[in-house]
Image (tube, rainbow, N blue to C red; front, side, top):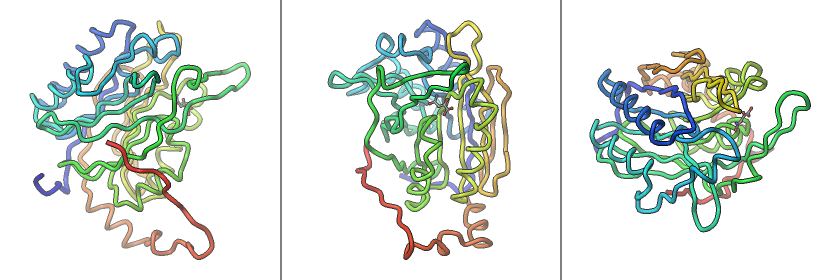
Length: 286
Ligand SMILES: NC(=O)CC(=O)C(=O)O
């Protein structure tokens, strides 16, 4: 692999997801083409971009992605190759050995799969009168973290609810990750309260770039996504952000800023690991 670039143009595609998988795949293909045509070297898709975000839909939309023979995975491998980009293909419901996972796949510009990350913390919440969702009714949690070396930088992956667990981001930072990407679909209760706050917090805590990529809000769906995809820099600054409509947002990242910020404020060296600890007990998965 050529040396990773220090300056990278990233596109986040905030896609409108429907209950028609073929249409969703076409929408993703068109967005990737547009983003690559506008010079993006890395393109990111939302959580569950091929499927409505619901426990009813996960089992029926799920695909076995082994060997990249699934419709969605094959389309994404092809799109990455055709447009010569690094593709962080959001997430799709994955069927594997009798279980379902919420899975993010990453491809290089040759269309080869570099990573498979399964959502590690399942979204099981009950806020009375507001929102109740239990992913564990249909999904199984992943067991592996995923550090991915790409031509567009060293990435760490998480999916949506994973952003609420700072330990995962801290482990990525310790492993030299420059950009953590969380395809995610917050909702109309937690979105306004926490989406931007958590994105900035993970970036500032760890002095790295963080991107969150949501589906657009579909008021015909049972789950109304917050939208507001955004990219935040290592000093907590918003580099680009969307509202709730479909669209593509872009940012030029300069990874040298990570080093610069850490030089000015050397948090990693100032940790008191003599008084507390952070342990990575996972095996990185591909
Ligand atoms: N949908 C999620 O996984 C997470 C979410 O909406 C939240 O944390 O809030």
